[in-house]
Image (cartoon, rainbow, N blue to C red; front, side, top):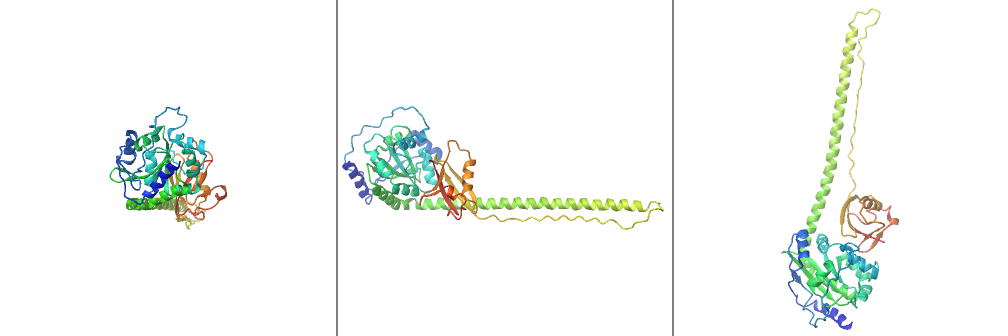
Length: 385
C-alpha cells in the first residue's frame, strides 16, 4: 500500500513540472457516440502534471470482460454496484453514457471527473470509504465538477480502462472537451490517495488548466446569457402581444355593440315615426324619440410580471430540465413542476443545491425563490432516499 500512496504523492509533486502529452485512440463505440453528441472526433491529449510515473508498472493482468446477466440498465450499473458496497454518501455520479456526461460538463463549463471502479481490487474499499465518501471530497466535486463512473469489467468502463490502461487502481482522471476535435485528459490519479491529496490535485488542476479553457468557457457563458435574455424577451413580447390581441378583440366587441345599439335606435325611431303618422285621433302624438343609451366600457390592464428566476434541474439519470419561475413563487412550485413530468422510476426525493450543500425540503415549501437565495439563477439536483 505504501508504494501506491507513493505513486499518488509523486504525481502530486509532478504537477509543477512540464506538461506530458500522449495520443490515444478511443474505442469505436465511444468515438461514434462522441461524433453524434458533440459533433467531434477524438484524439486524447494526456497531461498528468509532469512526467509519467517512472516506477515500473505493476503486473496486473489485462481486464477481461466477464458476461453478467443485465438486471438493470447499463447506465445504472456502476451506481448500483457502488451503493450496494459503500452506501449512498458519494459524489453525484451521473447515471448516463460517458459522452452524455461530457456534454453536460461542456454545457456547465466544468471539467469532468471520471472514476473507474474495480470492485475486486484490494485498494478499492479503503479509497471509496475514506476518500470518495469524505464530506470534503463530495462537496468539492459536486461544486466544481461533473462526475461520471464506470465499472472496469463491463460496458464503457471496460472500454475506457482498456484504452487508458491504468497501471494501478483506484483510477481517476480529469477530462474536458477541447477545440480541434480533441478530448483533453488533464490529470490522471493512479493508486490510493487521501481526501486532502485528492482535493489538492483537483484544485491545482483547476487553477493550472482553467485558463486554457477559460476563453472558450466565457464565450459559451456569454452566449448562454444572451440566449436566456432572448428567451425572456420573447416571453415578455408574447405576453404583450397576447394582451394587445385581447384589447383589440374587446375593442371590436365594443364597436359591434355600439353598431347594434345604433341600429336598434334607428329601428325604434322609424317605428315611432310610422306610428305617429297613422291617423288615430284617440292616441296622442308623441314626438319624443325614445332615449337609448348603450355604453360598453372595457378596461384592459397589463399586469407586469415579477422578475423571472431560472432554475436548472438535474435528475439522477443525467437528464436536465430548465424552467422559469416568478421570483415570488415558492419552493413548492418546483416540486409540483417535477411531479407533473411523471418521470419513470422517480419516487420520493429532495431538492439539493451543490455548494454549499443545502437541502430544500418540506420546511422550505412555503419559502419564495427569492428568499431562498435562488434568484436570479440556480442549479438544483434531485437526491433519492
